[in-house]
Image (cartoon, rainbow, N blue to C red):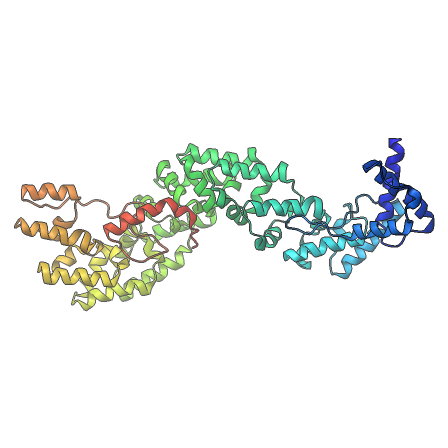
Length: 520
């Protein structure tokens, strides 16, 4: 009985799939089938003789043409119940291929795929993808997407991508960049990758952003490249809680092989004098430097620095201050800046090399920005050779805002009564905040009746300054490195030296620095 019922169901479905009116010989069978289904659902239904075959067909036809919908997507026609012979399949395949060719789509790669049973289904599939924003060129670039069922593949995948944060307006671009996603299983392939990213502390709201930047992540095996890349970075000192921010900033490192990309990068940095812990700190804040090509970009840039006079023992400090210097077109930038420094600022090549060692960000600093503070100093009647000396001693002056320099200069002249020579000897004066350090310390020293050099007044910690005031003697500290890794100046960005209060405010922003993508 069950086998007979199954055959009748298949026959009914094959009849319903035909948009034309049924032949007369099917009406009687249709009537009995309709009565059978109604009887199974409700045994108290009316006698089959009271049913009009034509009315039954009209009601079924109207039901089959109604568009059932998901909450967000219009569902396509259902043809999986249609039974076709080999001859019908071949005919339909020819019809479908002709339809695709009429649109300009080359169906050669679809020969090994099982195509829909009717051209109507293929038409719905093409139109659905076109509504996403895909074009005929996209179909020809990856024709296999036309082998994906709208109901079984495309709609579940798109629905899940939208759920994890990729907006509907971006779904078309996502499919263009990674059409293989349409073949994937949501449960077996997509969800485990998202779970893995969440396990790396990638914020939930950042998952969509990460996948849009690097959709190929969806195709990686969890126990393969991604896991080994993370494990190696943690082994050199990268904090596990910083892996998530690194992935958000630069997810491409998850696809890099340890043996051929990441480890050679780290080994080369260590060979330049950078400890692994410092390399780890650099990667935590600027994971994108892993994308620099070791042989084609990094090594030539290091050789370029040496050729311009940078000492080998200073390379580690230069790279720690400004890791981006390994990835910029350095030779052209250094040549241009060296010529500019010699022509406009009267700084010789040897002095220019010292400038690079103390502030390597100068290679990316606009010449117009550099010229403004230098011009300000020249307008204060400071001789050009003294301005050049100031720049070599403290190149951070060239990144100061002229408005702040004016305020500090006039306070030096009017309130402190200091000669300009002290500025030449201590150009770092312009790098300190007027309200946060210069004025308070000057007033305290004045109240104690102590007069000292600018160096002694400013170049020490607050605690040391208080101790010296109590002793009644202010002396200069031993001169140390002028700049530490990740100092005040961040380039590209604002071209100014911030005051201490500003620096404290900006230090809090370091926790969200990973959300910004730095482009060179």
